[in-house]
Length: 335
Image (cartoon, rainbow, N blue to C red; front, side, top):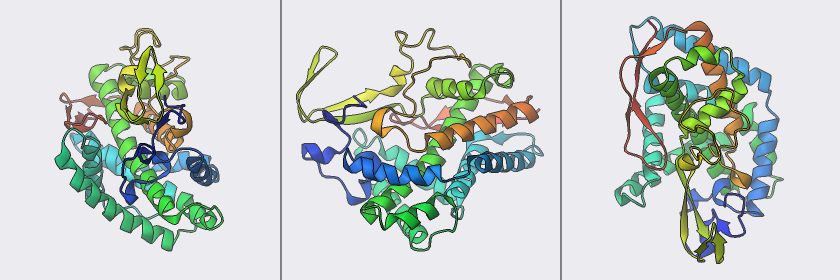
């Protein structure tokens, strides 16, 4: 379904639904419009120095951990994963780092709003959060940085043929993806390595780190579900899906499918092949997944090499979200 945009639409306007202008971005468009936007952004991502990216993430990680190491304990998400994801994503984009408290509030409103179909009261804060983010991104594109992803996009936007509003919305999504998705994944991985399977961080040092991160994405599945609109009558797995129907894809369940993954509830850091759906699949696969994979790999490597004694102090708590798994608190200590 993720690959078949002719039958299953990410753009709900194709089945008559209305979409707020701020919600129309690369991920909510279908080919051929989607292809043009993605090409522009992929060119900007490929233009970055990825060796320098790894060095930058390692430096930010090392400095923040050195500060936290002076304390008896700290809250992993709000004091480590979120500020680290925010500073590194901003550096990657080439823009000033937004206020961490403001960014955290905006991200929580947007993630909660993903479940507005079940809890309608969550929809209004999302619109307000999108407007606040839009003001920030418009300023970046009006006065683009000389380096980074945003600088390249601003330089090439005029000749791309892409609607400036869609460029703004997609940059906003790129910031949100790097910050919110990156920090959520790191938090969930830390829970798996330090709480659920406390011996795994030590094993990470000796593992093929690329494969290990892919396995942690599968196991953690920060995005649990996505939805598609059926555009034309289609048979799927022996079930007839009618045009106009909404279909929810449970990515978290797919990533634990025993028919696809032997012993799916076990972390196998060397699992290969690993056809997980943690970053999506097909034309709508996550644009920021390469950055998130590098971010997670570098941070885990630094933790495993420099702070192998890090441990969980208590069980984690979670926000009541269904579309995205969202850690609320996870207290850890270095000693």
